[in-house]
Structure formats: structure tokens, C-alpha cells
Length: 393
Ligand code: GLA
Image (cartoon, rainbow, N blue to C red):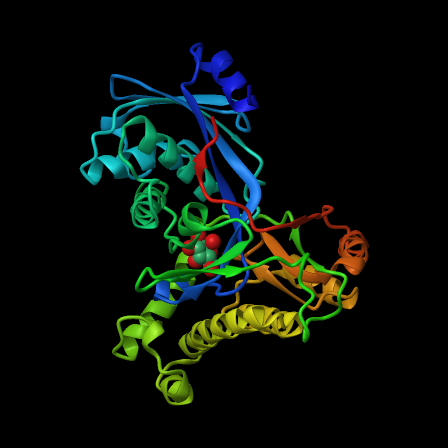
């Protein structure tokens, strides 16, 4: 029995009828572009959130969290913005959103257990939503896991849970990654059209000419353990300014800025709006370039794009922080081909593209840089591209 199923029996005093799980993500590149209709390139993490569940024949939700060590109960009719609050909002919000979409969803008994580090910018909240969404789809016969179009529909319900009930105005990349990614691949998602393609992402086997050596490569994730929250106002403030910039340019979103006429667009904006806009427009171009470089097996070029993305997020979008900057600098100085913050920023995690032979040096260099500054030790680990949300048993 999984730990979630075991905990379910103890906390809710009845057996679950199944176990579902969904992954966290790291975004390789394309940061703060999703809510501008831009391009993103996430991979699903091997780390997953598990939901042991049983359908109920009333409208009550009982949800237990192994990490929080508590059980929350709520009637689905009482779910609304800010109700329930805290972690349970992400669970209740999914059932709420599916009902809003007209699906016949009843109550659930749920126990959640997460391997995705919480609050680390690795989308633990999307993993939670998508695990519960997958369970609800199967238990109530909604068919939302059957193909990519249905999965995209389920992703939209999970996004509404996060935006409307949990109060985090995030852009949707995380839920799409958790539901649409494929093992061994990065997901190229056009956040305007919803079009997807799956870009092979297998660093261990990366021996192509133009690559950087033949010993294989790894992606090192470092959870800086600097506080990170997406509903504390900073994320939304960035979003507001950049959306106002699009409006000032008479555009629906910054996706519509012609990169060839970027300077002209920037000259029509105030300084803050111009810097935010420059980030979004150049970052979308970097996603296209990264896909080309990956397809060509040119990991040095991917590394340079990581570096440029980090500089743009740090200087123009201003969503980095000391811990993220120090972790990417230390990784580069110990042999990474490139490194950047990933996710929303203001804390959270960084990623580094590293020749396998230098992986230990990179992890040690980051740890040492943190120790020198007296910071909480970071947690570093290597990841491969995992699979999307699914039923496990
Ligand atoms: C968070 C949000 C995403 C996206 C990223 C930044 O992860 O949840 O929607 O905006 O930040 O790219």
C-alpha cells in the first residue's frame, strides 16, 4: 500500500478506491511569459504528489494531508474565493471548478502525500490540483485524462481552482505541465493557442556533435529554501505592470510585440514597463532558440540561453533574489554550461545544465557559497523529465 493509502485508512477510517499522482515541474525556459500568451518549455519532475481517494455519495469533501498532518472538511456548496483557506483550497477548488464547468462531481475523501518540495517553486500546488483532478475525473467518469484535449480542459479547471479559490493569479504553465508532459521530453506550450509539441530531453544520452562533451549531462535543481509564495502580491504586481504595458501599446498581450520593432515599442513605455516588456519579448525568443538548440544537440547554446534568461529575470523583470543569484553564479563557476532561476521567483529554485562529471562539484560549490553567507543549506538534486498525471493503482 502507498503511504497515502495507508494514511487515508488511518485518518479517514475507510479504504481509498484508488491512488492517483501528478508531478511537479521545472520550467527549462520561458519564464513569466505564460500569462502574456507566450511560450514555455517545462519538464515534469520525477517527484509527484499522490492522492488516495474514494468518491462519496454526498457533497462533502474530507481531505487529509500527510505533510500538514491535518484533515479539513467542507461542503462543496461552501467552497468559494478564500474558502477553505490554506492548502485545502487547491483541493476543494478543483472540485468547485469542475462543477462550475457543468460536470456531475460529488464529494470526495482524499489523502494527499507529496514528494514535491513545498514552497520551492517546483509547482507543488499544481501537482496537488492535478492529482485530485485526475482522481475526480476517473471516479466521476469525466474522461478528462483520455487525450491531450481533455487533459488541457482539466488543466483549465485546475488553473481556475488556483486563481479563483486559492487566490494566486498564476498563468497556467504549471497545471499544463503536470497534465501534458511526457517522459523524456520537454513540453513546448504555446500559451495563446494551446498548441503543444514534445521536445526530446534526454541529457544522459546527449552525445551529439556540437554538444559539450560525451560523458552525458544532468539537470541539477537547487531548492534555495528562500521563502517563495505566489499569492503574496509580488507575482501579481509584476503581472499588472506588464499587462498595463501591453495596454499602453494598444495590444492584447505582450506576445503581440514584434521583436523586430522592440526598441520602438520600448520607447513608448515608461522605464519600468519597458524593462518588463523587454524581458517578456526576449524570453519568448529564447524559448524558440532553446528548442532549436536542443533539437540540434547544442547544449552549450542551451546553457547560454539559460544564462541570458536569468540575467533578464534578475535585471529587467526583477523577480530574482540573492539566494537565486548566488546559486546560479556558483553553479557556473563550478562547470555548469548555464544556470537560471526557474518558476515564479522571489525565492524558490534554480536549475543548472551540467556535464555529468561536474555534477558533484556544482552541488558542492552551491552548498559552500550558501554556507559562507550563513544561509540555510540549499537542497540540490538531479532530475530527468518525468510523466504526466495518471492513475497509479
Ligand atoms: C509560476 C506560475 C506560472 C508562471 C511562472 C513564471 O510558476 O504558477 O504560471 O507564471 O510562475 O514563469
